[in-house]
Length: 271
Image: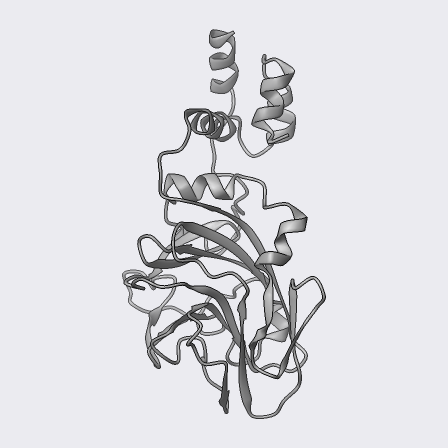
């Protein structure tokens, strides 16, 4: 069976799962670490657990309201104000990935995605990159592709390349936020292309998903995908990862055609 399986795997094209080859961000993709690859290739946490990782209606500007399931935050049309909201769960250890869904047409001039501690600012007069406006928050301003921390622009993201400058890239409606609380780093993935480390040196603390907005009536969704602690992965999980990567992006069809017992196929498909 092992020889037959190896022949079947070699007949498939290996590739990175779930990526968009036509994306403008593909050229700036950075190879993810194994832990991140595994999270991106794993099912999201069950639906009943997602609200635990949703928006916190008690940790936000008064201009935000949150749906009953906690998965969508809506900002009221308050003039000349920038408002922020944090997630319920903060992370002090482990690698964690969540998705922020924010329609591009509802962002306005200062739409920022990132993390903050519970001491980060939640409201400010005028229009600003509020997530990143102090030492307790780190944010990616989507429209200009700017990185903000400590009240200052600290760079652009993804990296501009050898020329040192480029026009901002249009960030689609969904962005993945990648927090490695063990290493103290924050990065992002767009179209499932990981773009590398945006911030390092976050230090020790508990970091919450955060956004800040100026657009009235914008609706911002959050969906926690999964997390992993810094420890050796079980051999079975590593083997599953190698097989799933080898069969290519058409996981369902390709796995069912492998010369394997049904129980192993279910394992490979996370059933």
